[in-house]
Length: 250
Image (cartoon, rainbow, N blue to C red; front, side):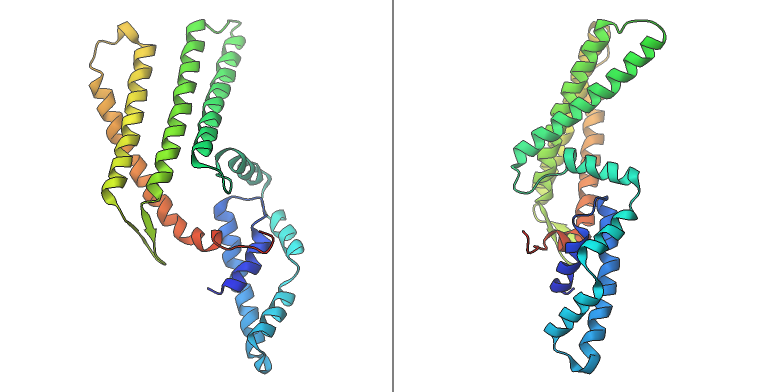
């Protein structure tokens, strides 16, 4: 792909408020159109490539106008999701990983507490009953555990993604054993959180072994963690060329 053409397209698409998949489709469609215009200008009367690029850029249109047209095609619901993703779950440029993981964990814990707190309060208010104190204790503990897990999984996920090496068409693991270790650590953290939650909620009423839920959650979480990261790495094959484009304003 022509980097100069990609820069022109990226200048249009990057500020658009939309989900990553939608913006990728925009990039690919616009690049095909711009490339066709560029080739037409390049063969017309033997124009130099620099001149052909200028003519293609002029025919392509003003970035601001194209951006407005693209933004109008994005549904309001998608804009809301994209904004929430950008604020709460997307790592900002030059943001330290630990700070990013803390921010993600905090947002997850707060979201769990707010969502289930409102849900329980509304349900019990409808029945004209107050929320029992033990339920609030359980909800706060669950929110704290979710926040900790969000922090841990964000750290492990980013470290594990660094074990992938990208080619033009596929990805491969540079250090498979380290990736396996990260997956097991993710499973261990989830298993420990599950056991702790059972202990807090059930306590003395739990007479079965804690090993059964611990091992089950460990195995499931480790596999899910590894599969999700592999799929994420494969998805990044299409995103990476565009994310590496540096715009003049940057």
